[in-house]
Amino acid sequence: MEKATKYVDRTIPEISLKDFSSRIDEITGQICDAAENVGFFAIVNHGITPEDMEAMFDISDAFFHLPDNVKATVPWSPLNVGWEKMEQVRPTTGLADMKESYQLQFGANMEGRWLADKHLPGFRDSCLAFMHRLQAISEMLMICLARGLGFEDDFFVKVHDPTHPDIMSVMRLIHYFPTPQPEEADRVGNYQRAGAHTDWGFLTLLLQRAGQGGLEICPGGGTGWTRVDFNAAAPGSIVCNIGDMLQSWSDDRFRSTLHRVKTPCGDPGDYYGERFSLAFFNQPIGNTVVRGPRGKYAPLTGGEFIKRAIDAHFTALQEKLRTGPSAGGPSSVEAAA
Ligand SMILES: O=C(O)CCC(=O)C(=O)O
Ligand SMILES: [Fe+2]
Image (tube, rainbow, N blue to C red):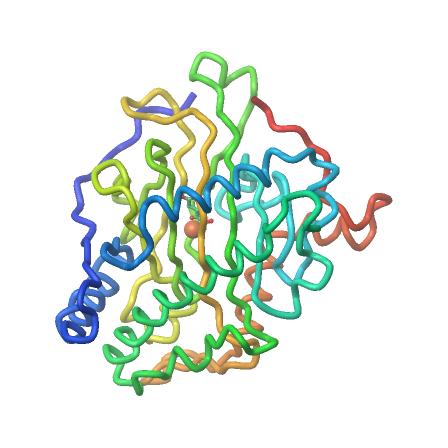
């Protein structure tokens, strides 16, 4: 079992998007300040109600409770779409996260990866409608981030056009399995919920279900963890964080912060139960060139940036798809709890 976790109090800014057009200067200041100093912030008054979120989580819940052989009809592909179960290995831990996820995109990469309507009627339409709502919120944030970096207002919006066939943004439905109580942990062995990582994309919007905590951040690296549990106090907030790509695109001005979903280990307040979350990873059109205003890093396309990250996280799974006898489907490894 792990030792008690070192926790540090940090303020994670909460930013209201109310009256966005008339308050854009103030909101831009708040977002850029949070992006520079913490890399994480929560947004409220963004237009999606807690009830709308819960309805989306109900759909996600229904998907993940389908039998594995049905979910395996839409297997993960290296285009970063489809369903995987305990296949994402974080380079920081070398262990697979104890979760399953279904990754959905807007465009052509979804060919053959949408669940057939007969399994969950309306699934595709509901997911796409929700993705467009998250896209609209993301675009407000992109305008602020572009202003902060001295780009034209629509600079980031244009390269994240959801109607472009090569758009790489992903809505990821995530389902974490219940984890063992501390006294059982030794029997079950080493496992992770979501091992410590930074996000590799541009900007992430994260929805969590009330009462299912676990997200923690460690800005600056190595100085202790801080719990991010906005939904305990204000259900319906959306947690946003800067990804590696935007860190690079801002010449390191905006921070991509280390975070994890804690593996509960006996600390007060730890959450052991089944957990649902939903992440919307904004990722640009593949051939977009990522280059900061000061050109700190050699230019790289968004597509190359993402491919490197996928290769690092899904090495074993890609190898299995290339060579394995059961090529084409996620493994049937069972959850440990
Ligand atoms: O599930 C969560 O709360 C966080 C997930 C996450 O950090 C990720 O998928 O990148
Ligand atoms: Fe993450």
